[in-house]
Amino acid sequence: MKTNYQSQSDQRRNFLKQVATGAAVLGTGILASPLSLAAETVPVTGASDADEWFKQVKGTHKIVFDVTGPNGLMPFAWPRVFTLTNAATGTPEKDCGVVVILRHNAIPYALNNQLWEKYKFGEMFKIMEEDGKTPATKNPFWQPAPGTYKVPGIGPVQIGINELQDTGIKFCACGMAITVFSAVAAMQSNGDANAIKNEWIAGLLPGVQIMPSGVWAVGRAQEHGCAYCFAG
Image (cartoon, rainbow, N blue to C red; front, side, top):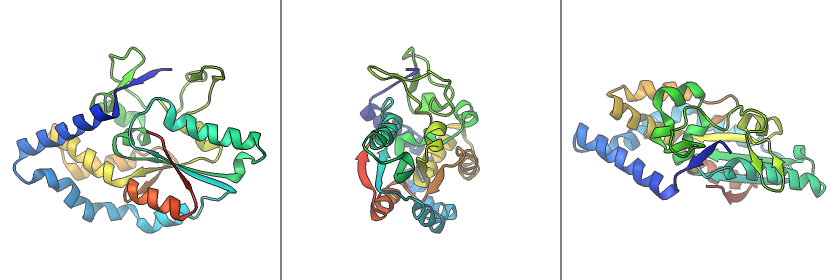
């Protein structure tokens, strides 16, 4: 494996520290601004488009993997395990409906390598390289080199986002997380929050559908018949 991860609790504490620091610098009431602005800005992502997207989730067996933060290989290995073991028990991959929701601290996995480098997502989200000391400089699950990921007893596994998409697994991303974290990035760099948010939306990986929020997507997935699995 190429990447090691900090615990979720540490990531959440780091996120709250980042937001609180930005609030202290920019003045009282700023802490709430990303969320208050979100009510105005997130709908441009198209709730109707997101609803239509969920109608495309077909299959005999349907499941949603809820990814709230880095959790090693699990957010990407479990969808592969689901389709492989269904195939082994008589249901081809094409007859499985699999949705992966990237939200909260998992949002950088929905974004391209250029944004990882520019906004130092490895540092921001405490996602480290194999040495456990160096922050990752690119999305480790987008177009990984063959043989990058191995599972004991199984061997190399194809769990890059692009590889999973090729088997019909669908990915979506939390628009609220993009709004909040891009605002945090703007606070840290004295940049324009709306401009950075739009840049992040433009930098979504191919085939990743933006959602009004990740929790909205969790609800919609289950309304469309997906079983729920927490993946990190």
